[in-house]
Image (cartoon, rainbow, N blue to C red):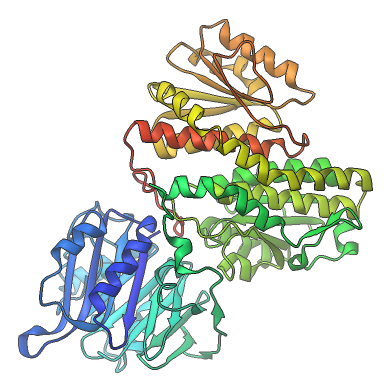
Length: 608
């Protein structure tokens, strides 16, 4: 959940690293630091570092004037061990200041290693788990930097993406990966390393993604990869799909607003080239699941975390409705620990925006170990989950930089609609229903654009609801995952406490919370449950609760209604989440929140 960037070549390294950190700041932003091989002479030669608590701009202000070099590593942090401080910021050095390490992940046996090093006379300068790595590497008697790092990793338990500099080896950077992403960028007589391609695309689009248990040595003119046991590997370079401009704000004040506004185009992208009108179905070539295998599926289990889990809930309902296969969604973080029964007739689907979410990746690895068939629904091409699954669907949302997910959530839900239609047409879904769903899918981009045109009205509502001390979100069946996601969006970005419940559960306890200061947001699609949902509004109104309805028409009992275009009932939840993203955004804006970088959160959750 931290950002790593490194460079070796001929250019002045500090400006390059600072630029990379700014592009990665969404991965962590409580402190930052940089280490370089100085090109000076005498006392000015060797490793030089600068660190600062706070944002990358704080680090930039602390860079000394004489901070020249052509090799360096840098880091922007999301704290796991030790509070944000100058001392706890990366890079971490060994006792003799000859080794610098940046690290993303968690060292599980750090306390044990720290105690042993302390007993050996090592003095620690920080509270972090990472510092044990620098002391272990610095204390290794191995002759090469590669061997020093390998010997250290042999005694380490946990997850890591690391980059290492050593004063005695100024011609190289050594990196390693286990559970946390590391990407090499291939340039002209220069090499880059990062935890995310966002830091690389303005300089190169040729990348190599390391696998777990893989290391690399990068020099200005070449690189080599190998396992932590020392065996050579030969990964093939790939070309990054997106241009550097895709990671810019594009004239918007925040990435969140840009990404909400991009959803019509993003949904068009996930549909493009996949619809088969002749057979009223879709082509999903990456599934690696033929018709006979699809007909043999008896159950679908969807695993994800946060917004991915909520999109998976929508996906499970779509699969049940269109393909008539029992389906459910579960948090991957729970599934991986409960010793679940793995059924050979169950199709498992892992959902992750980054494709690197550690809990979801660990669940995939456990399922594969037990012989399950696992598909991935991910956004990032070539990510760990994409590589480890048997096949899957890319959601093609494009780069999502804001910490809170918007366009990727929507595109993931659309991807599940495609998968459900595909499975349904292989099984029992009629041609007429297939055509109906395809027509609905094709309407989505323009309907999302129509919702965006109502933004001024939603902005006015947000100014009113921003005064709430807490909010309740309710929905039934198709509306419930929308309520969960909308509740998450609001608390993530505005810090207003919010809860989501199935509407029918209000009377089983949560009604005790209803009062004028606790508004209720009700999701009311115009389906066969509309009358029951309106009865819920009556319950809230009878207790003096304020109501904001999201519906296909004005609701008499609601204080305010956001009217959403009508689609097919199966697809309505995809649209009903969009105005609630805008509500969360404008509520946070009214409260003066740091919208793209909410407190305590980071984008890619690559730790447990």
